[in-house]
Every structure is written in structure tokens, then in C-alpha cells.
Length: 448
Picture 1 (tube, rainbow, N blue to C red):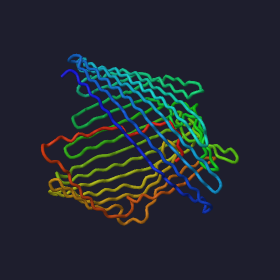
Picture 2: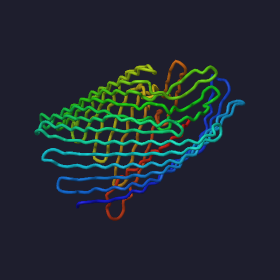
Picture 3: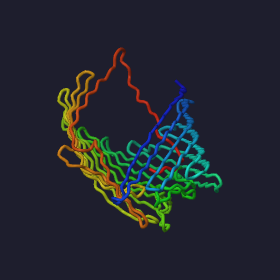
Picture 4: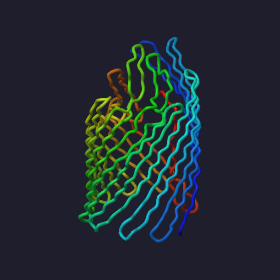
């Protein structure tokens, strides 16, 4: 009753065999790119939860991960050849400890998070180089949840973050930033909730950009990391209103995000070649308005919808802005063992935090599902009356730009049938959802 201990051992393997891409530039000369990768990641996580007294509790987790990563790329165009082969050994260790204490109607908490990464990479082929990168993030925060009365609650967390990283044979970067998390919630009635949130945070750039390795993308472009990138900061402000009624659930949000020292691609014209590197001299301001909700017309019929407007504005080294309107709708009707579903989503035109603009197309699906004991049948359509649908990616800067269209076969006009059998024989068991971190940490600078 007072303590629990657990251990989780996971093993993740990700393998991408030879991936061959043939491109035609301006209908003149084909080029051929072959890349492959393999990642192996065993991980051990230890958890402990201890009830010290009636009102005090401490929880600790310790995770150790080893990564064995390999990446290979070969590019051919006419008489031009380039080849890169990289092997990496990566070790990551993180400790997360939290202490909580109940004080009447208030809750005091103290949290500590420390995450350490060490990467050793060997580059062969075009670049013969050994690289060692160490990073560490230490976060210490103290929080207090104060309940003033049945209408008003304030959650405050204050602390700081120490970020350190060093590439071998370069100067170490050490920076301390304050961290603030505030949430004020007002509940005038059981059905209405207003909340105001303010958060500040920071992060260092992705480890695969913090290097001084130079690789040829093709005969026109060179890619190189930048070990002198600044750490990015985030300022988030959000106002939320929730309405929870018998048939209606409504949420309205207004969000403002500010990113400073944002790491973005940087293309520099060097005469006969383009240098593709990274820069942290840009700022991004996002303003978001979202309204979403569900309506239960009856036990059998339910509707769900969302409307959102997002405006992103970049300034500094990279300048661009884009506003987009998004809307989606979903309806479900249940009739005995049948479930009828109709969904619809408008086309979107978004700009990512890296400055890449993506365009998609209208999506509309209709399907009917039938369930009998352990059998599940589904008949559906996707974009049934649409012609060929292409998504786009666009990037433009003063030195370089590209426009890519790609084809997703699963989102073209089609009709599909699904049949599933759930086999659960013998004693009834509760199905446990396993949470496995399948992400691969790597400092390898890839060209894909």
C-alpha cells in the first residue's frame, strides 16, 4: 500500500533497407540516390513510488538507453559520385523525481529532471571525421496548487533550466533560463469553466544540427551543421472556455505562441554551390483561434466539429507569414450492431516551424461498420468522386527554393473493405496498453 517498484525493459529496432530515389531535374539528366539506415535501441526504465505519510508522496524514475545507429547515403549523377557512411554509439540517461505534499486544500510539489546524452559518431567516405557530442538538461521546479474556494483555483510552478552542450574541440555552451507555468481556473457553475494559462520554456537545438560535419547533397549543394546555435525560448499564453452540458460539449481557445532564437534552415549562395546549414536568428509569432465541440442529438446520433484559424509570422533572418483556416466535421449514427460514419475536412495550407509550406486537399470519407461477437466488418469510401489528389511542399528563400508534389495512394478515390477478428479465448483478461518510446535519438546529420 505504501510503495511500488517496477522495471521496464524495451528493445526497438528500426531498419530501412536500400531506398532508391531517381529524380529528373528540368527534364535533363537523371540522378540517383540510395540511402539506408538501421537503428537498435535497448532501454531500461526503473520506477519507484513511495507514500511517505498520509499527505506526502515521492516518485522517481530512471531511464538508461543505448543506441546503435548506422546511416549510409550514395548519390550519383553523370560522372559525379559522393558516398557517406556513418556509425554512431549513443548513450542517454535521465532521472525524473517528484515530491508532493497535501496541505489542507493546497498541494505543494517539487520536481527535478536531469537528462544526459553522449554521442560518438564516425563518418567515412566523403568526410573522414570522428565526432563526440555531449548534452545535458537540468530542470528544477517547485509548484503550488492553491484552491481559494469552490470557484477559483491557481496552479503555479516556478523554476529554472540549465542547458549544456559541447562538441569536441569546440567551446562548451552553458545557459540558465527561468521557467514559469501559471494556470488560473474559474468555475462559476458546474457546466462552465474559464482558464488562463501562461508558460515559458526553452530548449537547445536538435542534436543532429549541432555538428561541424560537411556533406555534399549533390553537385550544387553542401550541407553543414552549426555548433554555435542559440537556444530557443517559448512564451505561451492561452485563454480557454469549456461548456459541458447534457448534450453539448463546447471548447473555445485563443492561443499566442512566441518562439525566439528559432532554429531554421539557412541557405547561402557561395557562387558555384549553395551552402545548406542552420541558423537561430529568427523569431516566430503564432496566433491561434479554435472552436470545437460535440452534440449528442440522441443516444444513436452524435456530431463533432472544429473550426480553427492559425496565423504564423516569421521575422529576423527568415521572413514569411501565412494564415490558414481549417474546418472539420464528423457524424456517427448507431443502429443496433451498425455504426454509420461521415467525415469531412477542408484543404489546409500551413507553414511549419522550419518555414516549409504544405498544401493538402479536401478529405471526405463515408463508412459503415458492423460488429457481431468478435467479428468486425467495415465498408467505406475515401474521396470517392475526386480526381488525382496531390499534396505540395514549398520552401522559398533569397538563395534557394523548392517545390515538391507527392502522391498518397491511400487518400485517392477508392472503396475499401476491412475484416477483423478479435480472438479472446479462455479467461477474460483486461487489455493493457503498452507505452513504448519508439523514437530514435541520433546526432547523425542525414540528407534525405
